[in-house]
Image (cartoon, helix red, strand yellow):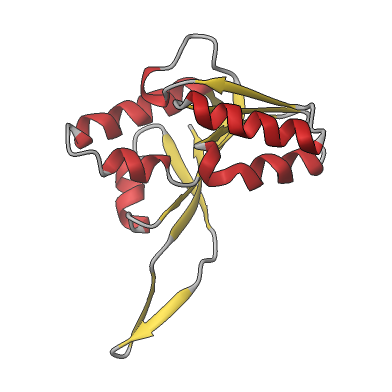
Length: 158
């Protein structure tokens, strides 16, 4: 039985549904917004998904109750924290500390970012995490070169 910590419910509610439908039975979704949790709760109830727990949590200031997860999925939270005009560098460091605290050793961290390149994410998560896989993302070509506007990586906590 895997626990899966999902960040930013408004951004990735489809992950909650998908994981529940694939048989994961201990899924936790967090968001700092009580309104987002309430909305997600009503959708979960409507779809009859009883194996998803929702909690109001600020990932940068976590309660001590969140720990022991095997998988953490982020599709936008790190990007949003990075864009904060007040102390973004310190908040990114706190994000990595929080992530280290909630994930088990050998736990997996999946991140999708439209603001950071693979190389930049490797640098941000260089302490305590190793890259396992770069997931395929759409590419574009311009001026003879090609690239991607999205980075999707799988890290493992060391």
